[in-house]
Image 1 (tube, helix red, strand yellow):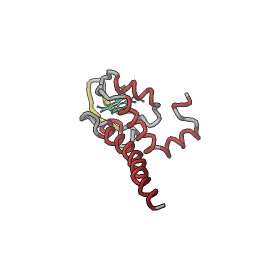
Image 2 (cartoon, protein in one colour; image 1 turned 90 degrees about the vertical axis):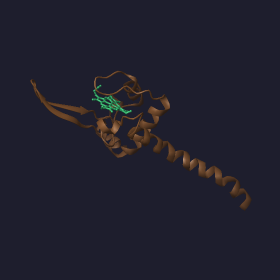
Image 3 (cartoon, protein in one colour; image 1 turned 180 degrees about the vertical axis):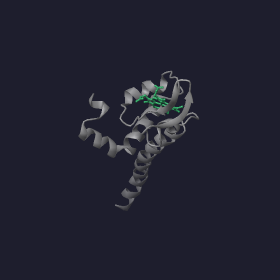
Image 4 (cartoon, protein in one colour; image 1 turned 60 degrees about the vertical axis):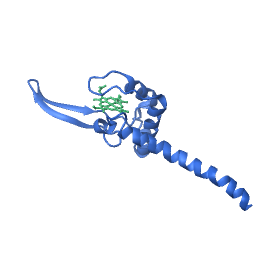
Length: 125
Ligand code: HEC
């Protein structure tokens, strides 16, 4: 019995590590993907934030990073590789964007559940 346990033990460890590292990997990528952090513009948890406020001839301007907590994986993959005016274009692999996506899903699970109940999830649109 004891021998059997020691045979399984490393497997149990790796299973646990895999789960943690997928989340941590996503967090690491979200906070520092190729040098420009998503968090800088989309907030610590993807809730969006004010990047800069300034004034020009048209009046007061606010540059905001959008709330991406309800974005689905497909739109995230497209956004990250697309050219935007403000957001940099990232050369992240599908797996890397998926890790970021999963990280945000886990981190915002309470908020996402709440939106589902209220019927405001983007996935339902
Ligand atoms: C320099 C600021 C900046 C950084 C850094 C940035 N974004 Fe964005 N992002 C924006 C702005 C502003 C928009 C909305 C307008 C646009 O399309 O440019 C946007 C749009 C998006 C969208 C489109 C969907 C929506 O609901 O608006 C997604 C998804 C997204 N960003 C994800 C990311 C991820 C993931 C990262 C990191 C890998 C990242 N962004 C880094 C500024 C940024």
